[in-house]
Image 1 (cartoon, rainbow, N blue to C red):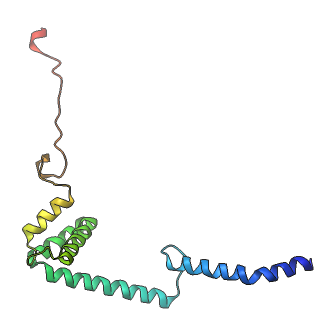
Image 2: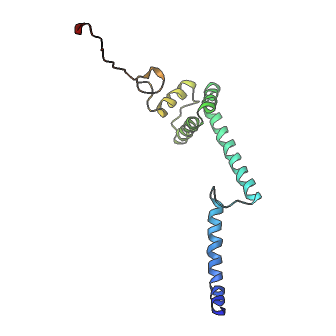
Image 3: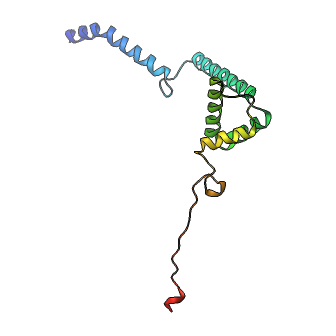
Length: 142
């Protein structure tokens, strides 16, 4: 019994170090170990500051009508609005935007995100479905 106890004591520091390292890794991941209140507040403050910077950059890049359209898109399809925002910010970083983005330019970008949009489907975003029905009661058969 003593031999087992002394073996555990010698392994304890290394096991403890491994446990601490693993807990630290899990603590930094979403869905991992719960964080302390200070860490959660700091993370929330960082996320809020990032959202504020992102909003200010987008406001500087877009005219009011385009901002309004983007906000309406965000209400209905947040993932598409996020993709549009990312596209705008990347284009601005590469210097591809000549001036403020207009509503028409935003619509063209949205069509790019949708996969080209305008072909078929009556503007509803999907391919046109064509129904072919057999004529069972053909006049020639009677």
